[in-house]
Image (cartoon, rainbow, N blue to C red; front, side):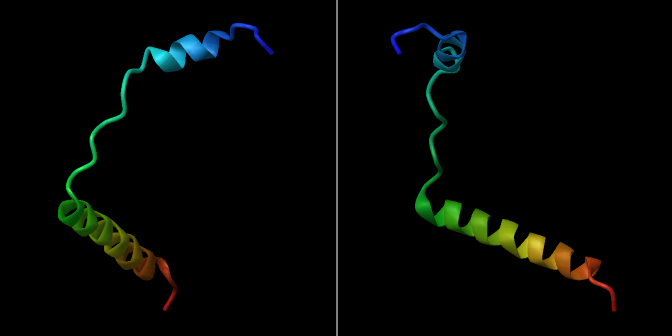
Amino acid sequence: MGQDNPLIAAMQSLGQANVMPPSPFLDIGVAGALWKERYVGGKEMPA
């Protein structure tokens, strides 16, 4: 404990996190991504 780690400086140099979009747009985007994954996954199943 109390030792400097070079990874801490690397993490701090990345800056702040990006801003999330407003809730309705985020919800639509997440729902669309989940629907796409289900659709693509369904096409991969053998008939």
